[in-house]
Image 1 (cartoon, rainbow, N blue to C red):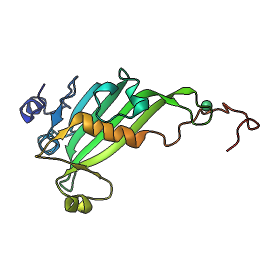
Image 2: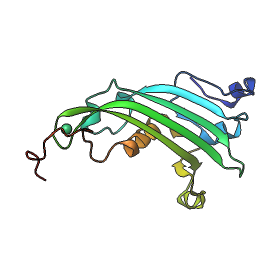
Image 3: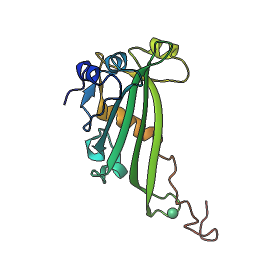
Image 4: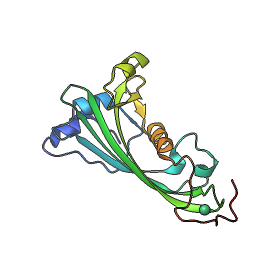
Length: 168
Ligand SMILES: [Zn+2]
């Protein structure tokens, strides 16, 4: 499925919705061609489609990541990409070493850049999103955002091991 500017023009009074995430996108183009209110991209990606998974994540390839992204231009002329992702992951609690379901919810605000210099010049509210030849690979991008959202030390939110038994 392609995600081009022509289709967004047809729906210029409400966000465009697509149900399948494209493989690659041109974020600059999507922002520049977005109608007022932005172009809205939603979809799901199976965890197994993401590159460079670590062992824990590799073992749950069918987990579905829900992705929602809005492309727009901000008032200063920057490309504004506001996204969120959510997925329920099975992680290993680092206190009792038993599996636990962790609902991961993350939001991100990024703007495409082509160089480190450009990244440094971005307003602080944006994280730089490095594009190559104008494009980004969606699975790679979402994988990066997911890793940023993972808890550093996953733990049950209750006392899964009593204080007596637990020695640091
Ligand atoms: Zn635990």
